[in-house]
Length: 342
Image 1 (cartoon, one colour):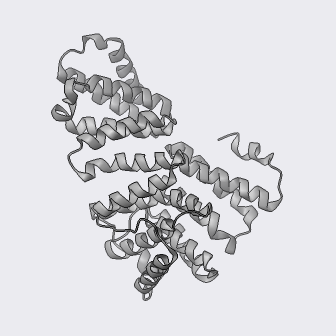
Image 2 (tube, one colour; image 1 turned 90 degrees about the horizontal axis):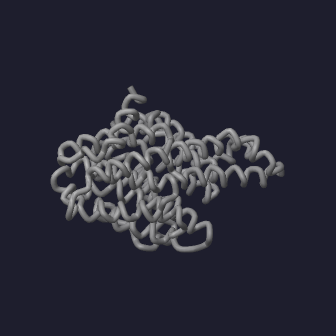
């Protein structure tokens, strides 16, 4: 069936001059969109980009009327195309699509995929502070306020509030929470997870703020209040990371292991689990696992990141692997051994 879909779209491309009516072009665009989505699932991002560009071409009307006559399909096609362009490193093309989506979308919820792509794209291009400020602005619209610059005093206040919320909850209590259903909070969790790497890289350079910590702590409290989401593990990983920074190995180990268990509750959320593991194996797991044993985890993070088109996740996996080789005194030639098959 998959091969038949690709065959149909390829034949439609050959005879595209005969697609005259708006409805015929929209139906063809929907098939091209399905082919593009399927290619993305198979990690064939260049192929996906080509199909999605074809879908956009068939949807296009004068004066942007495709956003009026076929709003839902146009939103899906453009949002997915922006992600595909990012996945192949076409940041300029991705940015233009994001801008068009933000211009025509009818609600904040409809804009969120574009905002996700904008944040990770800014981070991938090294515009870390801009990525954080976009996240903070959008999070405010979602009901989650953060200061523009997160200082240590604010971090400690957030940590105290989170510790208080966790005081009487066991790991089993947390694992047994209901699933999060609040749409705004689900979007907030996703955005905080996606933007935390930019903040972490800024902090590693000795630059502004600790948003990666405050966002992780906020994710924990949202989980306790609204229920579990696929990003909950990332939040608890952030809490474990801060406990590790404070030298509290007991809490770091507890929350780190809990974060891994939370990730297993959402087996289809591989990218979210990889982000969680990236935090833990960079900052926490050395308390309980020899650093040389981190190689397999970092390779998995890299493979998942490349497989789902999240370049920043793949980068963190590869960078972690390099740090392990350096710290363990092992030859860099092992990179070929572990990554050539990837």
